[in-house]
Length: 191
Picture: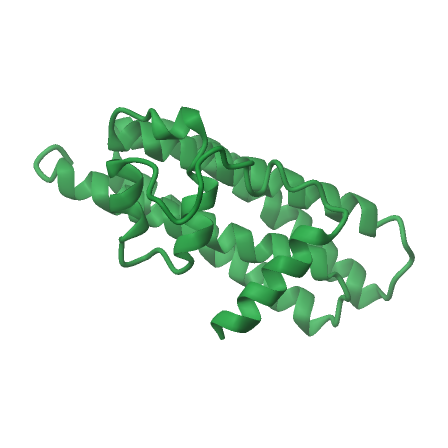
C-alpha cells in the first residue's frame, strides 16, 4: 500500500498540475522534523502520511510557528489552498464533454470543494475561539471529501489529478483533525 501511494504521489508530482498550493516547496531537507510543533503533529495518531505532513509543513513560516494555534491556522490555510488548486483542475476538466453521470459527479465535486474552502477558512477562526467546534468542522470536511471521491469513482470519472487532489485533501483534513484534537487537550477546561 505504501509503495502504491509513493508511486501515485510521484506520478502526480510529475504531472502538469501546479503543486505549489498543494505541497509547498520545502526549504528543509526531509525527513528531518522542522520544529517541535511539527514533530508532535507528525507523530500524531491521525496523521496517515507522515512524509506528506513533513513536506507540507516545512516552509520557513510554518517552522517559525510559535504555538499549536498558529500551526493549526497554517494547516487550515494550506488545506484551503489545496482545495482551490484542486478546484482549478476541475475547471480544466469540465471544459471537456462527458457523460451525464460524470457531469453530476463533477458538480457534486465542485460543491464539496467550495464547502471545504469555506470550512477551512472558518476553522482558522474557530481554533482560538472553540477547538471543539473546529475539530467537528474538520471532520465534516473529511466526510464531504470522502463522498466526493465516492461520487467520482461511481460515475467512472477518469480524472487522476482530481483523485490525487482529493487524496491530498484527506491528508490536510487528517492534519487538521490532529491539530484541533491537540488544541482540545491543551485547553480542556475552556470548552
